[in-house]
Length: 388
Image 1 (cartoon, rainbow, N blue to C red):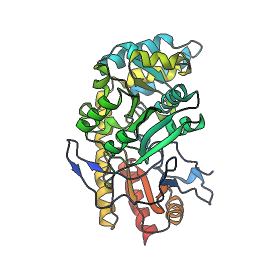
Image 2: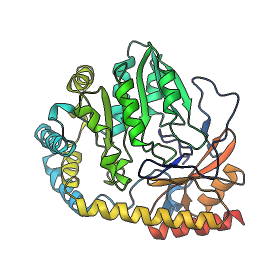
Image 3: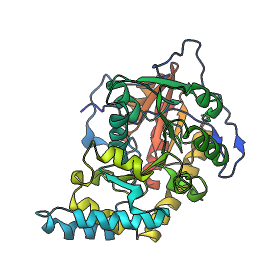
Image 4: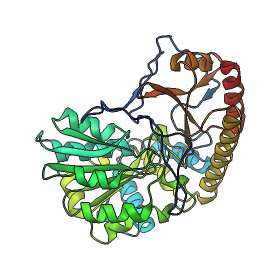
């Protein structure tokens, strides 16, 4: 079976500390003089060989949580199957109330969806359903919302990350014009794994949102040591036209159960729900699982800790092998390869390790998700074999 590109593309990024100081990685973002509007500098390497999924011992290609869902979530999901003949309206209301209390906003500020990607696409649909205007984002970026906007006739105005892989907020602000209907920021960034300085980002969102909505995708925020210091939800509570997306697919380990949410001004939520379905797209099992998962603090902290441990291990081992790793704050790492991308990919899959390979201005990169420690050791052993 061939593997198609996950709608989140991948690249490389600036390393920011969990405070506000930026630390430049050893490698600079490959630049090109041919970059133009509507064209990304990153491309996935599509394998010309077939992939036998049954032979993959370490699935490190989709940023999934190898430890989840938690036992209590599994129990909640299993026990709710018998209620599958009923709609989950009351469960949705319960989950919305829990999320609103967690985020410090009213239930009217919350919209649920089957994964955050669905909510990105619905937002793009509502903003660009007339086929006019443009969307501004970094390049590389998670492309789901951008692809939806373009499919409706919108123009994408990509702004290259800085040479050390940070969001170029000044350039993004300059790119916004009277035709901009949405600004999109992924923080921590996917595919880079890096974060944007929260003080600068808050100032940017506060200013730009007076002109057009700013959508901040925080799918990987929970992997940070102090996620609350980096979230833009506080700006929404202050009345700014900012939209924040969160998901249960990553740290919560519920990627296959499909549930996420956005936080936004009630008027912005209404503008979306008046055009598209909201909770009708959610299963009772997913709702019950999410309700249980929000209460699993100890399990989530354990997953986060083990993810960080594996990330440190890979950082040390890959560096020792001579690769210049791009430091990450998320559940994946990206590093440039010193060989042909497809050759590397073929060798990794032959060794039972699933990864993704991309090119940035023709330089191949490997993107690896954090699995269990056993899986990461297999990854390193296979890299050594392929690179020999």
